[in-house]
Length: 264
Image: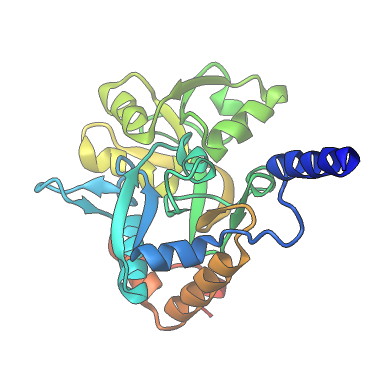
């Protein structure tokens, strides 16, 4: 009897540390549908992907993508405002259900979250003040390059140790853009779209894309171990790429169409 009691206690302790056989795994998609709402982490300080309009209402390509998703799924939409560095922790800690926030697909990120199929693309560049003669990486020596902390551009430039780049990190894209507008930064590493936005905000300091970094697929981020949610997202993205709705949203805010291979 004592031995059986000890064995039962050991099994119970083990089940606290890890799920036991036969224990049901909570499914996030079921939880979302049951709640009737979806919480989406979106950075609202990176125009034109996410921003606030004159009436302080969220707008932008990621915002309209999130709104379309919630509408198609018949769910109430709750935006979880975030920054680049906080996007992934938001879903890991359960603060948000998914991420729609210019989230580039990278091998490093795929180790800690899962991705949907791509719904958009991001051309990553170093953009500089138009009056500067910058044609390649060698021309950037001795110049400070502004970058948003925790972004793929931050990671890429940090790993380019052989080029001895000088990097100034900002907490978010809005702060980085402000630095460029105010003259604190003459070069920034970000998306080509944001580079163009600098000149829109301050015509006296137009920036131009000068050094290409790479082109990233943008996808919806989901916490690890939610295959049903990823499958449903993939089906939704495929349908809305085919019917042109996602391309129309992207073109409305970015002024160009999605890559042809993504739309076909």
